[in-house]
Length: 82
Image (cartoon, rainbow, N blue to C red; front, side):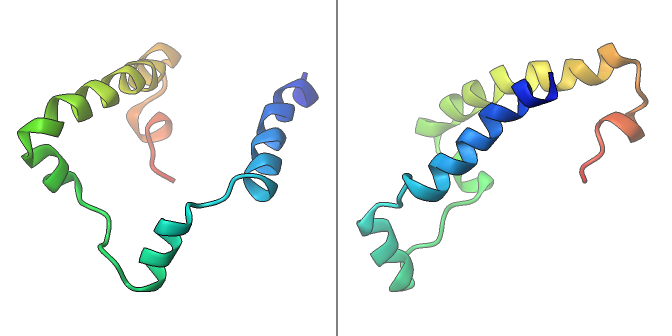
């Protein structure tokens, strides 16, 4: 079963290493010291993007946060940022 589970991960690594390329416009902007990416405060501060950002975060947050509660693990062992 381990091999079945590792195949998608290896596929992602292979595709990102050999076929997935960054856009030329982005590479040129980065090389020229272009605009840095925004912050969460900037994203959530703009009313146009606030609801979209919260809605996009919500579907992923539910399963991740409920997994800690369902497993019966304490906060220190389950939700540790490492």
